[in-house]
Image 1 (cartoon, helix red, strand yellow):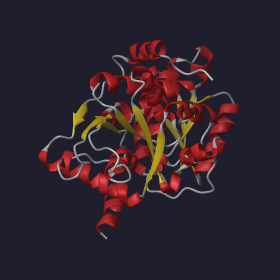
Image 2 (image 1 turned 60 degrees about the horizontal axis):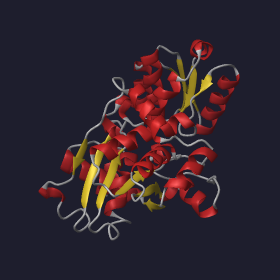
Image 3 (image 1 turned 120 degrees about the vertical axis):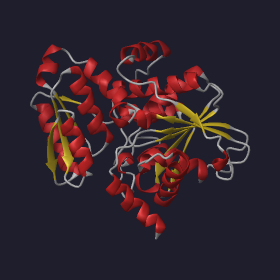
Image 4 (image 1 turned 180 degrees about the vertical axis):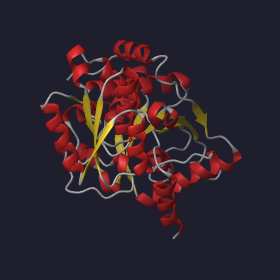
Length: 325
């Protein structure tokens, strides 16, 4: 298994320079956070939701497009996603002048469909996510290049540029708390951070209802879930895969799980304190810091990531209305 080294990560960052954004970091130091965060802990957030296409996934998607040869560029790319990956591939393909086909489930937030189409992608809708993946595979067999949402060296490498960037922006951080869907983000961030600071701690966060990587760590091999039940649709990978699991197993210290209401509360804090409209996945790191990790972070310099947010106001109101009840 080939894992990106610091030279490869630096080369990738140079390829992204001027196209992708160096997203800001913000210490949660205002008085309004004092009674919320763990005692004597400093917490910094990297605002990757301000990235191109609204999430960290634009990094890996663009690197994947850059790797295409002339024949692959002419044939176009295909992706299956109901969320941030769909938008990232649509954006990256448009930026590189490549045709993109996006397979999505019908139940997806309509704003995400519109976002992909605005970026020039062709969107096809299917009854289920499984049907969308089947259609993606069929299109790949017919000649398009498959852009997997989390598995593959380019996705891990893209996330690694985020991790290296974060370390250089806030070198005091000793504990990173990173959300996990399929493992693309944490595998990349983990491999970069641990190479730059071997003493750092990297902790993953998954929803209780979509904990494929947690189960994989427990079993010592990639696991598949029987069903997904979480409001965090961007973290709803039904299985772990060999590459992202293997890199994560090498660099991630442990994984904790959060409940849907813990993510809702974190979304509420982001809105009240930072005026950020965060989707559940975007709030997962903060949810872990306020919830299952709150007693473990005393005196630590903690780094969390607002990994992306592509959510309509209608869907946001639906989720937060449930919190009010």
